[in-house]
Amino acid sequence: MRAATVKELKTELSEYSQQDLVKICLRLSKFKKENKELLTYLLYEAENETNYIESVKREIDTQFEQVNRKSFFFIKKSVRKILRAAKKYIRYSQKKETEVEILLYFCQKLKEFKPSINKNRVLTNIYQRQIELIQKSIKKLHEDLQFDYEQEIKELL
Image 1 (cartoon, helix red, strand yellow):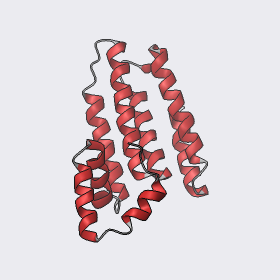
Image 2 (cartoon, helix red, strand yellow; image 1 turned 90 degrees about the vertical axis):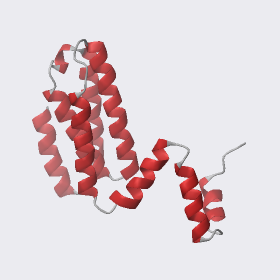
Image 3 (cartoon, rainbow, N blue to C red; image 1 turned 180 degrees about the vertical axis):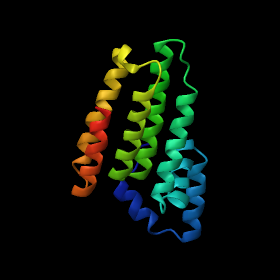
Image 4 (cartoon, rainbow, N blue to C red; image 1 turned 30 degrees about the vertical axis):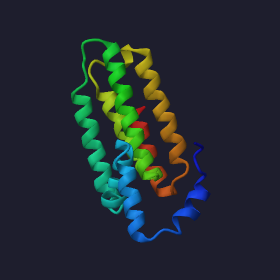
């Protein structure tokens, strides 16, 4: 079975009633956890982005506390998992400000992490790639926000 294009889906969905659309959304949410998370974001959290960012930061804090610090192998694995989750939350929002906020917070937590990430090349590379990504995203923001975020980047460097 081939997947329909977004345009095809849009035209088809426009023909359904509101009741049918609710049924479709609920059925869609049963298949994947990510679908349910996206629906939760769209219905409950999209209107208050600052609360959403704070909840993601709390989630990142929790995940960093649970990192197994016995060896750098486990640390790398955990850091990649945290970053994957952060990127998923960024994808839900699709706002550059949210992306910059969450990635900056991730980098701050990674920099403060003990044992130091400077002792491991892979962790240092992850950190540097995220800083570069933040800098690219900052360029797409309003000038006032750019200045504020540039100051935070300088602190991280």
